[in-house]
Image 1: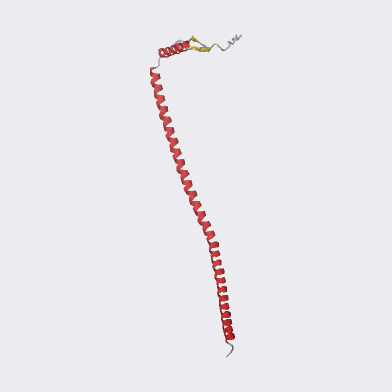
Image 2: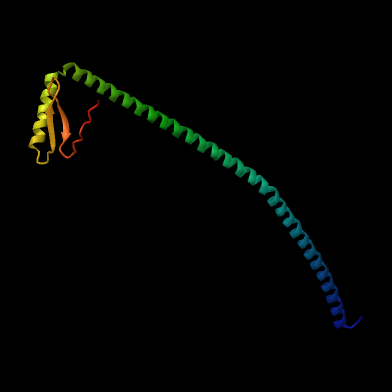
Length: 158
């Protein structure tokens, strides 16, 4: 039998060596697990990037289609609004034409003469009137000439 301290040291050294070897194996195994895991993650990212890009492109195209459909609907609504505005203008024009027909049916020379006289009276009573009315024609409706305009002599033709 050897020295008890030597036997303990030898046994401890062997245990230390075995433990160190096992720890090294575990460390190397862990390193490879990390490397392989990292490569797998990198592969998924590299594979997923283009897939995501294709998905995003499809989503963008779908959005463009929806926006174009909305623009088409908006344009159709604008066309309908303009058609309705045109219909309103036609109805207004028909109303004006009917009122003109009624007025023309009842409009007489005496009524026009009465209206001309009324207008002359309003202008005569106005504080700022510089217009001279000269009756002319069969129905007496005046020609209008302003006082401020210079008179131009007429040349006689030979």
